[in-house]
Image (cartoon, rainbow, N blue to C red; front, side, top):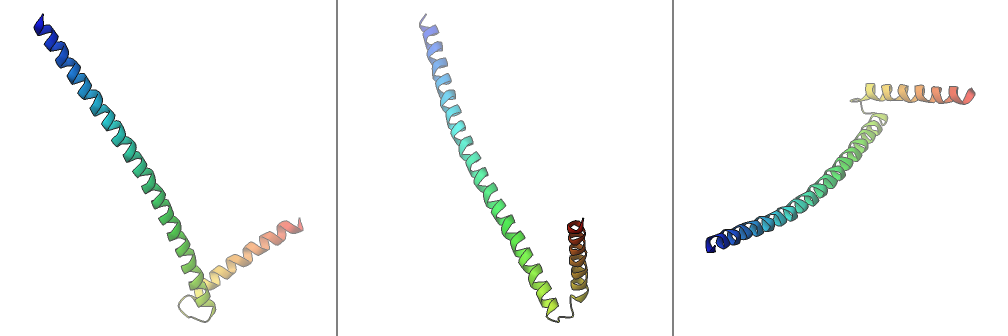
Length: 96
């Protein structure tokens, strides 16, 4: 009978240890999820910043071309033609 009590006590200890480990793993998992969410937010902010800088770069490149730089004249002409086409479409829609 004493042996059975020892087995039950041993099982209780093991179950208790497993429950404790489970709780620790849940906490670690929650912490990792929070870190992942923070990393995703930081990544999204970085991507937004990159897009913003790309837009600024394109604007500066266009302004440089308009000021007489020979390096991007073709690109400037294409951009102007695109803008004119967009304006024509808007005018046509307004006329309807």
